[in-house]
Length: 254
Image (cartoon, rainbow, N blue to C red; front, side, top):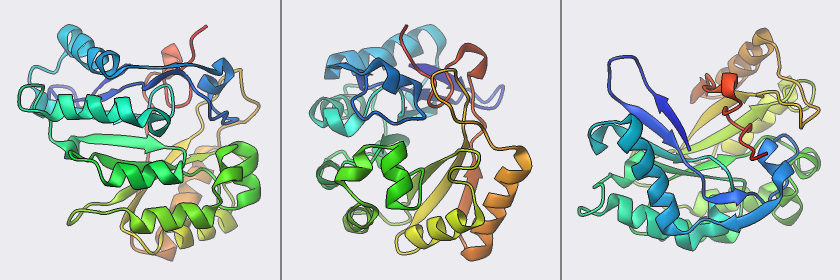
């Protein structure tokens, strides 16, 4: 788990938690993939991550906590235990979290996206997309060979959103791989038909992957190209924890 305080003095915390030990998805840019898949975490272990971290580091009240399932593992590969953990954490006798403060990120398991949409309580959905053609996505993320972009978009269109709710589309920018103007155009077109936010994540380099991070001007150019195509919210993630190899895509157990 990674504890990320927000602005100094605010008391608010984002906690990035894991759903598995290792991961079976094999994404080429992710350090966790080098571990392979070891096992699922139980609902108790997932809840235990949250309780252990807030006991040591805060926040003092659950209303100041935001949970993101973006640590080790593919949450929808372990959906039964993830769902049980969310139910406990959102229960009044648990932490009483609002399900709107819990986000589950997936690499794109289509049947499980549909299943997630039927949960109660239901968390927010984030999709780790990372490419705009089936060819490139399948090279970066083997799950793309099973579920092409057309099937993935259809699942997002089916996902039952609450009023003013949006799907977060996460896009790891890899220099010279998926950061062209054509990629920005295709990414905008992919997202056009459902409420969304786009979260750009400049690649956090690590020795287990051959990719490189784009320079700042390339990230800015890509973001401006998206904004020029459609009215949407585009954010650039300021990765935390690089100094201890705990930033997005860097979690690995040696």
